[in-house]
Length: 485
Image 1 (tube, rainbow, N blue to C red):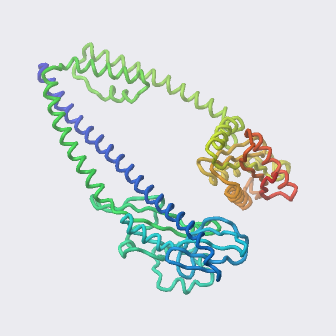
Image 2 (image 1 turned 180 degrees about the horizontal axis):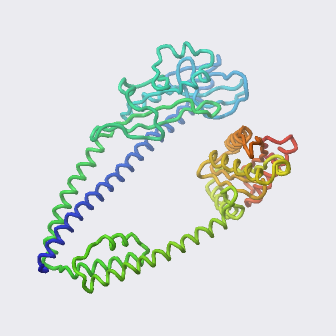
Image 3 (image 1 turned 120 degrees about the vertical axis):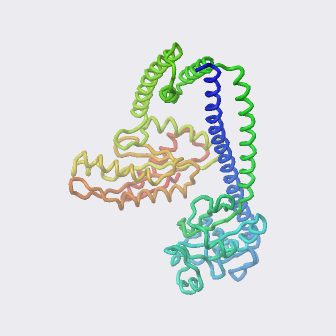
């Protein structure tokens, strides 16, 4: 076969392959752009909602003086004197006789007042402001806790869909949408799409009781993106065809093969061993000097890949031994102090809250003496599993040694840290550990401290948490105590 024919065939196949890859790349780029636009839309709706709530709650506080009778209900604002219990100033959602409200408990000389806003009015304002629809629903299992003794009155005329009690909605069609949304999701056909966005509803105890779902029509966004994609695809076809025609006149098959091998060696130099598949799958019609060169490069790439993977494996094993506890899989003391200092400095610089929890398994020596060290190891691993499931990705847990653990919680106030600590304690207390057909139950004690001005390093924070832990043990164990200077 002549060089001209070989170059022609190569260009035809190269053009088809390049067009396919180009279309795929354009599609991926468009998808990324659309994803960012969706995230921006979600963030805009969420931030606007939170800002409106914040502003209206502050406005409600200004109207507190008008609530002489203990209750004030206006279009947007709702103020009511709270009944009994501790006045904890925590923002939450509350169902009253006239609807759903969001607000916060405030302590005044006259007593504890719930200062809130009417959520339905806020949602209707956002509907007119941003052109979005909405629906409010509660988890059916949580309705008795939300409404108390008024369950029959509350449930009257309510729509129930898949264990969701629909309270309010802007338009009838929203009831046909998949409302069990986490974060945000898309719904619709190829060109007709809606963005569904979730706002969780939590009660005064911090428990999720339902959701607000915002629905934004984004069909125009997708039509625009597909139009741009189509235009770019046509442009790619034109330009690649023109390029193929030019290359036909100036490129020979041999040069193309040598350039290919040069590119392969460059990628191997950058440790991009995906080129091995290209070498292996590329078929050569002629077993000439270029073929022998390709075969040599292929063997070299295999050897380098094997050596590199072995080095990476050894490196990973060394890092695992250096920074993680082999029994529990948690970070060890060295890893904790290396990273905790950075987190503390960040909290100092930006003024973010930071809490630290020291945990000690109660009577661990007795467990070892009674059931054996293997049972004790099983208790430690069981606690570590509970800890991993309970904390956030941003939290830093570690095993300091023996039965002592630590948890550093960035962006967490002392009150929030106490909630997390109690959740861990209760989960561990309720867990059942079975070892050789014997049931083992264990508890833990914890000391909690938070970052304050004057704290210089992580050791200061640990020292305060240790004092709280000592107090928890003195008071009978199986409890969480907060450091009090």
